[in-house]
Amino acid sequence: MTATDETNLELDDIQAGALFERPSPYVGTYLLLRIDDRADGRELVRRLHRIVNPAHTAPEPAAGTSITVAFTYTGLQALGVPQISLDSFAPEFREGMAARAGILGDTGESSPEHWEKPLGTGQVHVAIAALSPDPALLRSAAERAWRAQEEIPGVELVWRQECYQLPTGRTSFGFKDGIGQPAVEGNGRPSSNPRERPIKAGEIVLGYPDETGELPPMPMPAVLGRNGTYVVFRKLHTRVAAYRQYLHDRAANRADEALLGAKMVGRWPSGAPLALAPTGDDPGLGQDARRHNDFGYADDPRGLKCPVGAHARRANPRDAFDDDGSVNVRLHRMIRRGTSYGPALPDGVLEDDGLDRGIVFVFAGAHLKRQFEFVKTQWLNDGIFIGAASEKDPLVGPNDGSGSFTIPHRPIRRRLQDLPPFVVTRGGEYCFAPGLRAMSWLADLQT
Ligand code: HEM
Image 1 (cartoon, protein in one colour):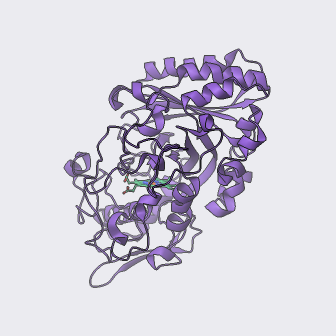
Image 2 (cartoon, helix red, strand yellow):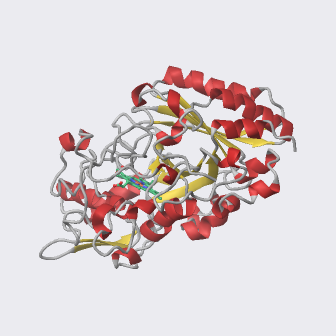
Image 3 (cartoon, protein in one colour):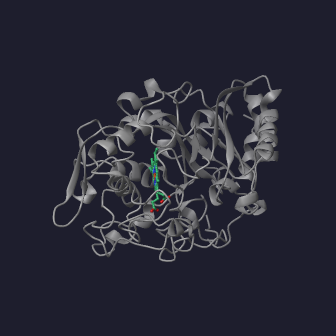
């Protein structure tokens, strides 16, 4: 097989969702479907093929209404994909997210037995995401997606989740998200971090060389794998009241509360990174797309500005490992397309109102194992890589009430103790978003 020039991405065949930013603000709908009849499932794929957005037609983010379609392993089985082809998918994808729960730290309240049904049961076959900057446009996009399955008896809508950007433009914990993203070679969008070269297209889209110079393992036949992307989605409930109460109980005053919150994330609520604004929020910096990602951690090895255990620093340590060469951070980059769901907890409220709120975390990449699973298990759920084995990610790690978080400080460091879990997994799936030609191939299967 020959490698396509990485600067020559087949944008007419790649679904836009993985490559291009979603609009901001946005509204969106996720629809999950089950295929009970193979022929009806193929008819669904035929109809969806007509409404997904190929990347070359992707409008500028602010205007973009997009529909992205992905399939689970059991979905590909339900469509009648031959076993030899099913066997060529990544093992983690074949197993499915629920089977990986122990590895991912989805235990206790986050374990699959407590997930929203039918997530993790094998009954989710097709995932559709419709996103738009405008509720009216979303309605028409969601209707298109809805109509695609409506009159097909052998296809059942089994789960639905609405999402929308909160009026503050931030996620439920109060922080701007979605800033740290790699640029992808060949998609024509510059890097928001001038210190980071765009990553090779094969890190995100199958069929192109990746950072190792190789073609990543690709599902076969090539028409099925090429221009596809693995997608992870996880509905993550956030315990905002517990998080606020925790900070409130440990902080000396309101300013200290804000500082502790920022130390946990690695950025201030506006998005301003601690690496550039170590002592206080700087909303101008937070909004400035030319500056808010232009930093590294090499000048802060001890984490005096941004703790080495802060969420964003763990999830992307940037240049922190450059000297010892022990970790090639570029092999663990990912595209994130998360959205918010549920109402904001009003400012200042410290008591839980019982409402469900959080993020639908969405990953896109060519390597489930060395991208999503590596970051989740080695960097967020474990502290060995930062020399603090017992410290999990303070914000999103599977803490159990006994964890701690160290905030380096001179003359004396601070340590937050007894961290409870602030995030609970409500369920999720590993999916594969095929290219458009692959969708035609699926629709035309004769098995
Ligand atoms: C409820 C769960 C989560 C919340 C509330 C959350 C929140 C945030 C926030 C506020 C940021 C800083 C803004 C930014 O740099 O874009 C961030 C960055 C990031 N998060 Fe998360 N996150 C969550 C889960 C995860 C998970 C499960 C992963 C990966 C497995 C992850 C990976 C990342 C990455 C890669 C970055 C970018 C770091 C950078 O490039 O500097 N996050 N997250």
